[in-house]
Length: 403
Image (cartoon, rainbow, N blue to C red; front, side, top):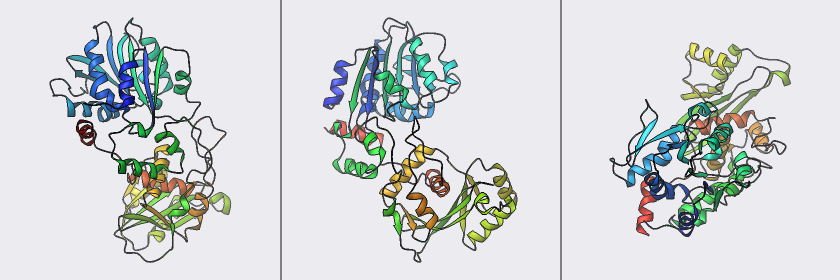
């Protein structure tokens, strides 16, 4: 298969102990690895240490690395991960596949040295796992290849990349991939435009999260008017002294609308409510509408228990991934998949104030007046409403072959 200028540059220069590509998403970093780099490295090993694959989780390794390899190479060369041993046969060699997002992975990589290690989504790893990895690459020919999307400038991986270790570090922007269709690139840029994710996922920069989290939220505010909604869901953020809020979402013409909101703060009103009272309010809020489900903060254990006992609504515990949820909410707004009725005044007020904490060392929203923001994030993330535009593995391979 052909390679881009940046990919060929990596093949020519990745001769160091640490060889790491960072930068934009969909820029060809990982494709190069599963198509060529990994097979060559494995075939060159001398059986004097382990071959190890580390990723955010074993599942992401499967999705990002092993599954794409099976699209290119026959089953005799690329096997499946064994759940019993956490190993996979690649090109005749037994390789270990380990998730690195949790400190428990440190114990899994202690012991024998590594002759070759591949790292996927390195910036998502637990820092202690990476520190242990340094001591495991103890063979004369030990080599590491890895990829990462940039995050905040003080991230431990950025500190390592700026050190004097034996590192070949290559930076990518999205335009470094000539195999992407122009329309796909335009759509991806549009989805991230005006957010911190444009700098990171399009330009590949390690930049600090500052300012409003949803700077273009005003474009999602629409006139409140009757619509022919085909489905309804409610998303809830729960508190006793802290506010409890509900958002009623309706689907119309392949888009979702925040139809109306409910907000009560026991602290602000000096009148906290019980779980039973909040449930009664939820029933009144839903009225006679056919609610498909209520998505709720997974930490609201007592309220979830009450709701399930009452059996009035189907209850789904929310996917509470904060940064993924924020990114996907930004994408939903940019793609016209999420709108807010203009009489949802509390939500609009929060959108206009919801900001990154520029005093934090990492990416964190300021935790003030953000309860409808949490409810909306629960709704978007749990429904997988606006995962960023992706191309299939088959499409990516086909484009490289066509060129």
